[in-house]
Length: 246
Image (cartoon, rainbow, N blue to C red; front, side, top):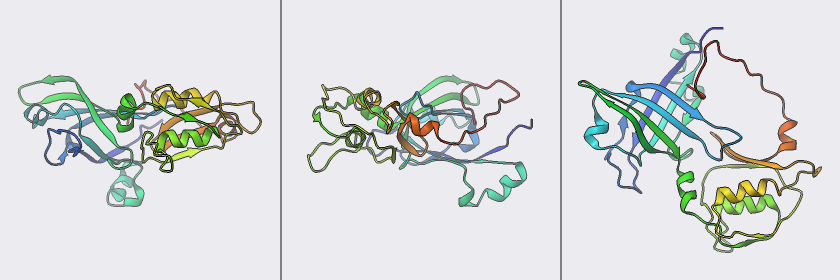
């Protein structure tokens, strides 16, 4: 099996206006990217990503970059000759991370090795929502359909003044067949939604729900509806890989 070809078209760190970012202007790191590991899973509430970066300008050390910067990324996927055609074709973009959509932020700089002519480091990116979740608490009573409750926890409710997680990401959801009443008890939003997954019932009432994030946004889906989807074939690579490496 031939190895797939990828082209990193864009990889830029952006200053965060809401934080004390070390960068004052966007910084292009595309030429120094050695590897990208992007993670999403049914078992994970949010997406994450690591970028192995060879910093010949040693900007990480000079600017004191330790976290808080957003990232914009575009990776093209396909055969080498086709990639050349797709470089300037916006419709041909296959993998895209946007600072105003996926909202991934630099959480830490790990494994930094400084040499005489370069620095090598692992840049760890997480969803901004995962950071907000750590300090947010569900502090009200909910009564009603479980799916609607999940939407309220994620996006808030202007009619009642409840702020929720205030995420702007899309939510793909199935309608739960039941209602459920509970008090938040100051639990974190994501913990509360994961707890509700076992309380929600599908149309046949034999299945629960799953809550997870992909590059398209959040999903609160019935296990029943997921099992009815067309299967996607998976083919193991010839060589072992760590995570979902791009």
